Image 1 (cartoon, chains in turn cyan, blue):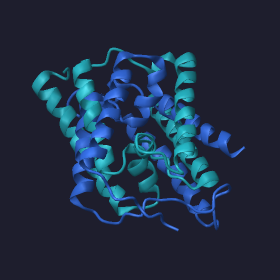
Image 2: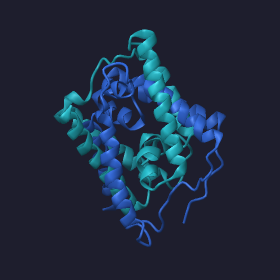
Image 3: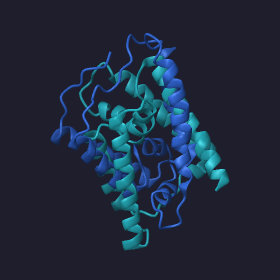
Image 4: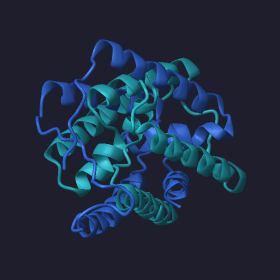
Amino acid sequence: MIESIVMATLGGLLIGAAASLLFLTHGKVAGISGIVGGLLQPRTADTPWRMLFVTGLVAGGGMLVLVMPSMLVEPTSRSLGAVAAAGVLVGLGTRIGNGCTSGHGVCGLSRFSARSFIATLTFMATGVLTATIIQLAFGGEL
Amino acid sequence: MPAALVCMSGALFALGLGISGMTDANKVIAFLNPLGGWDPSLAFVMVGAIGAHLTAYRWIIKRPAPLFEPVFSMANLAAIDGRLIAGAALFGVGWGLGGFCPGPGIASAPGLSPSALVFVGSMAAGMVIAHRIAPRAPQSRAP
């Protein structure tokens, strides 16, 4: 548990540093759902930097796969059908609610946005509720 | 090299997600499930990320502009409305159901694991559906 906490904190510091680098150099908010969702809409002036950021995200993920394969655990306790349904809900919800764990949770809370505070409380609550219901009703596997 | 810095930010973000444990869907599910071998360690991802970004943000925002762009661009929305809450609620259900949020899903995709690939594909579909059924008027940008 101590090792997990140290790794979580270190990883969190890196995430915060990455968001700060993007904000310092380009004044953009590192909200992943906004960046990806923007790329699924007609091209705008924001398209080029969004593509660069996603390229970096995928490249960084590729490096991790090589040096730290334990970051990916497969299979998970969820079936591919459940994951597919989850993806649709995450895509819908983050675009309707204008943000996810990074945009609302990290960037929004860091600038004391009331909207992001409410959004973060809401998705944490429904996330805990969903995982807990799956635990109680299906023994944690679905 | 402004373009390389954007790319580097994305790569650092992915490294942070991987090191922190956020790309391990089982760990995320254990974090969200207090009744099934609860693993609260992922709360420290937020502690580290907000600690670093809050500190840097307060310093950066004092500048007249970012280094390579004329203005800071932030969502110019203030309303806490049904749309915000409904969207966040749906997102949370998806997060607790699958164990992935958008960043870790995309950062995991290069590993070609079936769940990460299925997640990213279905998330993109969900986003396209949201753009169709709940379009938002183009935002004005905060100065």
